[in-house]
Length: 179
Image 1 (cartoon, one colour):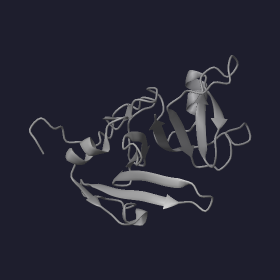
Image 2 (image 1 turned 135 degrees about the vertical axis):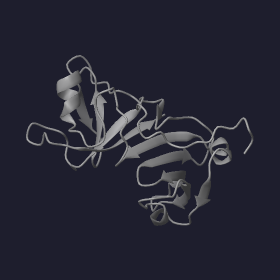
Image 3 (image 1 turned 120 degrees about the vertical axis):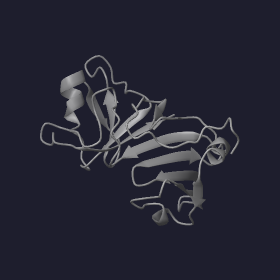
């Protein structure tokens, strides 16, 4: 590592900025730059990366496979403890997603953090939610004016159901920023 190289380690209380950054790491960096700026170990399986402590190292896993439907998946995942996962596209190796979980204490929109109720954004900032798939919710900033979502971020909750009046107690389990 050269003297001008900045060592990449997550900042566990950094603000989450949709489409830009989380954990003090900016989307769009190259995988080559990441490798030169980190202490890391390659792991042959995803399960070996999903551990409580990576001992201040990044654990890297390259997923390169074909699905049953014939879709090629080429992604590189970089794990820091069980709190941060970086997702690089393997085709054009740039950072396309940052997932923050568990012990991450930074805020999204200076309001919401991991462990909070999802409806905090509804009551504090007037957001509504668009249910993606599984347990994923996208943010709709002006639900009465537009169907548009806030690009570059989605929230994973503890429910496999959309947020609703019947199920308002969704708890934030992860926040993901993406390009």
